[in-house]
Image 1 (cartoon, rainbow, N blue to C red):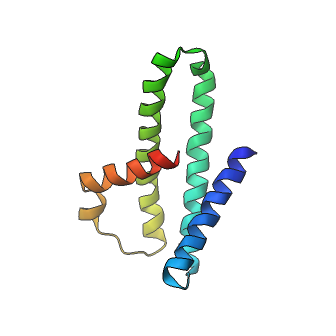
Image 2: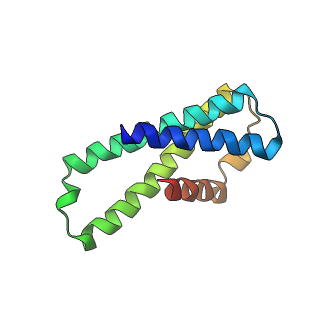
Image 3: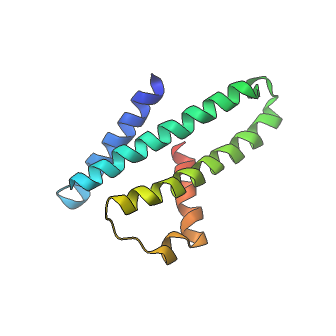
Length: 116
């Protein structure tokens, strides 16, 4: 339940920030933020199940820390790439040169790394 609440707050914050930045908001943008929150929920829920299955909570901190950092960065990359088809379906401009630029991928993955 906490995950649902957290990702709902994330979507609402993105919607409000988008509205405040531009003075208006389109339904496509709202759908994008809601879809992104749903993707993040799915990815973090799956991660939570992996943590349980692999018994990471029993790891000593020196082994847990690098594992969590690597997993969170991978989750960020997954969200980045799963977002691309959604952006395409919503009819937003898509520049494959920019979207698949390594700096763009790493930068956006870092953003999701921070969010997670």
